[in-house]
Length: 131
Ligand SMILES: [Mg+2]
Image (cartoon, rainbow, N blue to C red):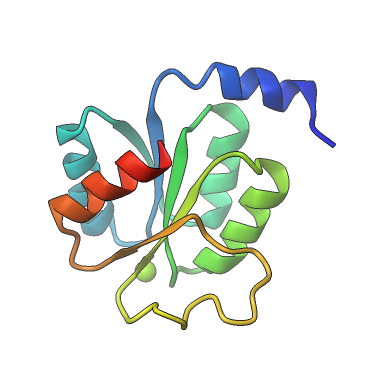
């Protein structure tokens, strides 16, 4: 079942704004600067709770979230975002190998992964494939 509000929100997503969720402010500001090079603006949240509250108030075209954070893991956030906003792509940031790991046993799959350290080419590829 889709909601009209979600449909309207999707159509209003012209701003190309990306929600970055990371408990490490250096990491999120680095990512934010890299996204800016590709003309994407971003909003930062320090954990999943803050991220969900920002999602309620703003339209985002994508969520990029760290895996390990206080209060809520990236996987828990992924599930909640997909439940409420199924059309918003969610990308998981991970510092370790994610070939199979990371999401094993999870029913909901992320739309992509971003491995640390971030490379401009990885970010470009993500943006091109998901947005
Ligand atoms: Mg972290």
